[in-house]
Image 1 (cartoon, rainbow, N blue to C red):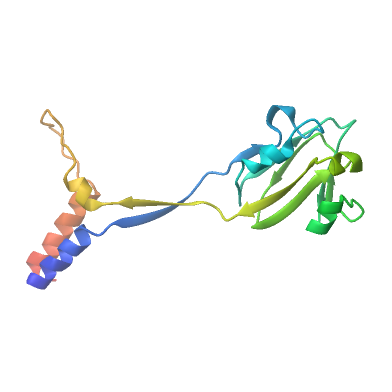
Image 2 (cartoon, rainbow, N blue to C red):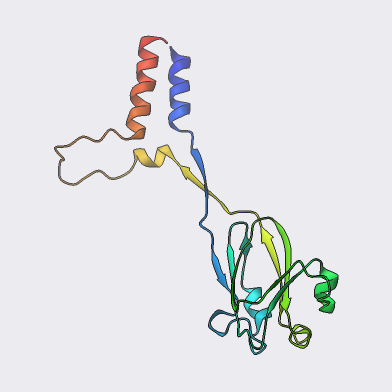
Length: 171
């Protein structure tokens, strides 16, 4: 019987860990200035963390700019637009970041690209928020100041009742 009580105490005081995925973030490149040669996209980019599932938005004037996704760092560095993965020309392009790795986006205007209108988007794994429910802290929580007529059988109470029943019944 003593071993069962110790087991129950161990269960009650063990922290339960829950893994929750964060909501996707919508990144608007260059914020209100958009994808434009006058925008300091390098500064904008340096303050961002991109994760799987996030969306990146590019807004630009279609008469002056376009957007090109390149295959590799070499093409990105040299602004070689001859072998793109995809060209975007709508003026408002939304791209979902579907996998980890680096995606290379540059201006479709070679001169703008060479002047810095390009960003390497390093996509990190989806965020995992670790939430721990420390049962011991729940036991010390303040109760209501006025007695309540209703009873609330929360998860902790349920665990205690089931655990005590198991111990008492010798299951």
